[in-house]
Amino acid sequence: SAHSALVGSLPPPSVSITPTRLVIYGSIVNDLEIIVKTMPPSIRLVVLDSPGGMSDPADRIAKEFRRRGVTAYVPDGGSCFSACAVMLAGAVNRIIHPSAEVMVHAQTMLDGSDTRRTRVFFNRRNAETARQLAAWGVDAEFAMNALKLPRETHERFLNARLALRVGLATAIAVLPEADAAIRLTCSLPPLGTVIRPPRQDPDAYRIPTPGRIHLDGRCPSWQPSAPWGVLEPRAEFPG
Image (cartoon, rainbow, N blue to C red):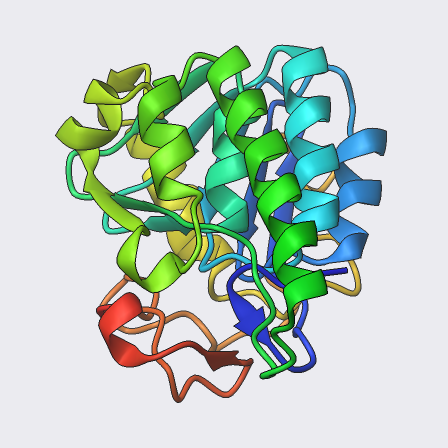
């Protein structure tokens, strides 16, 4: 599968689940598709804070979001870049916090193996993604332009107002409980065991590794030197 935002081995994200909410913090990997397709139908809100990841599972997750009619939310100070933006577009309702940021760009090879054959493949695939985004309510002209190659000259970073203008967001709002959930989820160990609430309190979270909560109560910004993965150049992912 092509990586649309990250190269190398992608570490799993941190994930938490309650009966009504799924929270994803980190890179998009294959295991997320399994979680989304098997999550309880009672989950109506998905909170996304991700620098991107694998495009194939992101495409399928986006379609599952649409099938389920879920609402997606990019939280306070959060980002939804690359493959995450496709997942966001799949949600029926797309809410972005006023301080959040979204980035859209084309898929391409990041390992230097760019050839005429791969360019033809990615041009076709990016055009398909643009058409899908347009079908989900994203401005068609914006989608076609942002998903062109070379992506360095076409990718688009959007604040909340711009995301609303081009249809990647359907609303700008603050969801305090979701903002609190992402701050807790980013403190959890990476995906391996999905963290579920204890039976006696369906809205509570269990933290299996005490002491990992960030002292300032905020998730760390995505950085090129982050230990969980290798990001693209710093200019594409401001902290």
